Image (cartoon, rainbow, N blue to C red; front, side, top):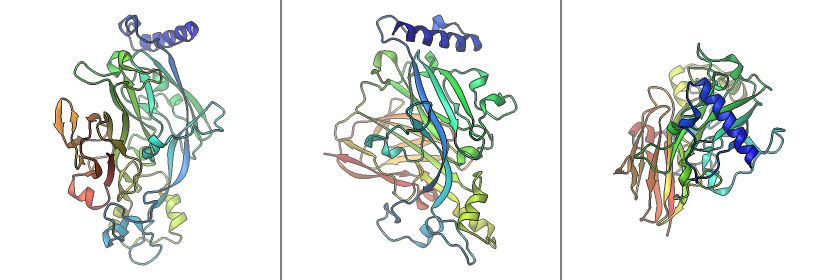
Length: 374
């Protein structure tokens, strides 16, 4: 244990030195759990992703309308060709070790993550080491928000980024991060905060539109369990409100070749609209599973946003309210790359709508349910 702590402190010291900081400012007080390096083995993999796996509009409970069909039904020919609900995409998958042969099992409480990668956790003062393998056919990376990192772990393809942190197909890279004080909750926040991580190779977001995104949760040291969860929370839920614009995906040509052979495009605007999936965790029209809780539990929602100028969302709960930034609300404002925390103690059992309150977003599928058991 002492050796592990020493390694963690040395790693943290090197990261802080690169950032021009002193580790003395970031060591947690005595009497709290020991700092450690938290290891993750994450791969980027290609999958065929179905935005409507149940094959119906679960939210409305009705057969697909004409509008639903624009996004959910494949049309290989005719005046309005459409790819439909299934696309080749990429996502982050966690493995048990550096051999990348055995995916880490997903427990039932996390089935709601959908397209999202694994939750990366840390306690303030911890280091995080991610061994990353790119199993896709495109160059990918991991770029984190909120944590401290050296240039070699930036994972950004902008003009000042380190190319060594971008990973070509079949390549591997080890990213090193540190949860400094500022990575955790501020004075008026709760026991944990959330940040977003994503692939940052293409600064115009094409690799994010492919599906490479996940959440980072950082917990206060005196409020953390051994596995870095906030000990005052009964249930954690992560939701990403995002318009996955498949027109901007690096897989667009492959998807056209697969689902629309002999493709001609007599109505470009119609075709482009059909590829804009207004989703929550990669699902549309109420197909997102697993948002469940019990009455009276302390439920912590981590809400993420992504996208471009259209990525302005208002996440709305029916039936119950939450607390965000010391205010009671049932609507949370989300912008691209923004990550917020909302705490809920549900007192109204039932199956309730959880959807974007931007009316045209809700109309085309940015809808879901959450269930409060009695």
